[in-house]
Length: 218
Length: 313
Image (tube, rainbow over all chains, first blue to last red; front, side, top):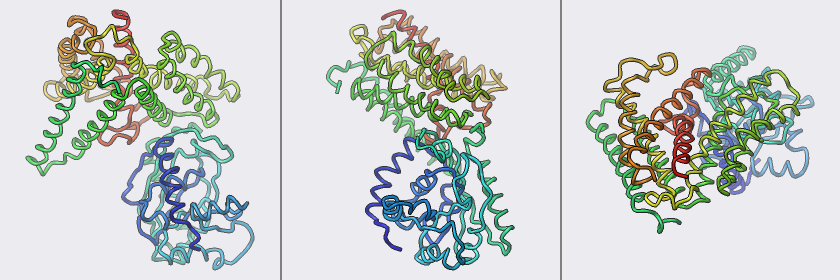
């Protein structure tokens, strides 16, 4: 799995992503100190835009950047050769098959071996980006992964405003300040439904802490 | 670099501001050592941010016309972005907002080219008419008037009003041998920020009657009048060194800048109350957002500019 090119990833983030996030966007961060900077850990975030991953990764200290691995849809990010090369080498995604039936063991193999390696996973439990600035029902995958790795902390992160800056299906980036609210590690639960409800409640709480919350006029 | 043709009074003004910064740092360090039990984090952050902001402004001013114009255009960009991020916008208007951003380089080009006529009508007339036109192409009528009004208000405050600071730099230098191009900007920036601080200190010491309890409960008549008095005196004293104004005209400039800054501050407070937020962003540690810092300049800059322009240019 260690195809990630450390210098390439570092250059990409230092020269392109960080200036973009700092100048073109601009972040209001709530509880930055709660962001895990040591693996293994799972960051569970809401998903509105391709910028979500870039913003989360730009918050990470450069020394652990190579350890940060977004879990991303194989059908989208490995679609063609160039996109696949870039996703795997410059960003270091862990591809996940969204379609087709397969048992959980194989599905989460990549995630679990990365966690065993001490990586920090970025996971979007909504499954896809959805409509701009609207939360979708959460999928169960996060629960299954968290149950299989009970010692790994799951930290909920809510981002707001990125769906305004670069929504799904529109290639034009419009500058906006965005919010990132980081919460406390989620308690593990026996029951999948209960766990997912806890995640949803944490997301809602953190969304209320966002400075620009309520201004998308949707 | 315009170092060589910088008038001595402008150099003294830069030195004076640095002296004030040193005093502010000394006070904040002494306070921390005398009362270690109290938390002075915000004060220290504030002072540190002041150092950085003033260093940036001075660097831009000293690098000459081109760099200063780019610097103030960038300030407008940050302020516009902050405003559009806190105010409700329709998702369908993303492309309209992109035009607002594009208006910044165009508008500041008129400043750079010293095309006064275009500078003065571009945003109030052309952009004002263009925004709804572009919105017609979107075709969404729900919230049309409200959105068009917010967008134009955003451009007027964060781009048009603020850009008057930059236009001070391109006014003919021959009219102002005392302070040179940057003298006017230093005069305006210093008095506006000085008035904010003076108002705050007067308010703390003898402020009792609230002046606008529904909008900003911390503002008092004592603070406002004390600030006005102090700013007028400072404006009269500095006028002949930095501007073509005599002491009496400077006194009146102070009487314009102080209330204008006060109203700018209150206006942004009203906006924040409307949106139920405390700060406009976290950009400047200890201060809040860039709009929290620029609010008084939004009103003071065009009013001071046109007073000066009417009298001397």
